[in-house]
Image (cartoon, rainbow, N blue to C red; front, top):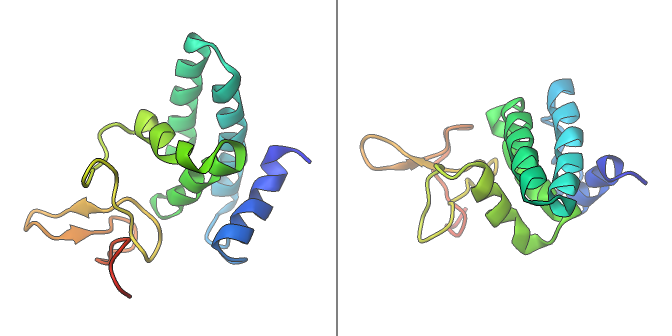
Length: 135
């Protein structure tokens, strides 16, 4: 089975059977392309890896902001769980960080940002709960 097909099985097994429901046709195609690019990244030399990162970044940006977390989690379908954060940081080095790693919304999984009044908010769903905080 191609990785672009098995990624859905992986995501649903780890995040629930409806986790991919928000994907539009464009999001789904971008996600399928993304996991192939992660494969390319893993086997490439330095120049190839740089090109793969650029292509991965562009592919994720073709997805809705609220579904991009799915691509981040899909990295583990191709690589290892601990590869998700370093690969994502290489793609998006300017995303907000908290204690050395990003803080994710518990509602939709998007990377949280800090508003002008200092509150942590989700740019995708407007939520304010962060991973590690109670429901």
